[in-house]
Length: 186
Image (cartoon, rainbow, N blue to C red; front, side):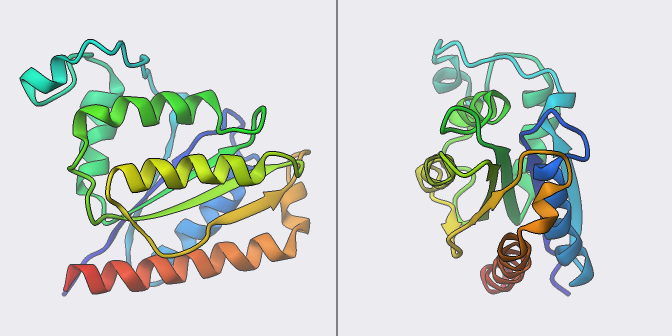
């Protein structure tokens, strides 16, 4: 029996906020289909920024000893599906997501063929740009993109629940990612 592992990366510092609401909806769909799921809140981990030292080229791993190296990277490498969810800050992903993405330089090539998806939440402006940043990150890692992603509108806590299209697209995203992950695993 094929076991799918889905990892949700939450780039918001607001526990239970709009970004996390949609990410949990996505992860619950995976769970409903039988996947093992895990939610990582980046704000709860110690992740130092990449220094550009290039030691990873010599060592084959990042030389910065923090939660990114010891906890998050092993989870990324063992996942079948990776969904990154971020609030939109200044037309881009949150700083948590940006530091996370930069630090994966040391594992480039090792996320190949993992199925990736993206969810972004904001007031309306910058949604497309933030989504593009996550998709570009995934393509740089040769991940498989099979859904356009979710652009959701919400500002105050819980407001995203009023965005019916975002709710529908989040379920659609989960279903499509799971379907493709099964095909990749075969």
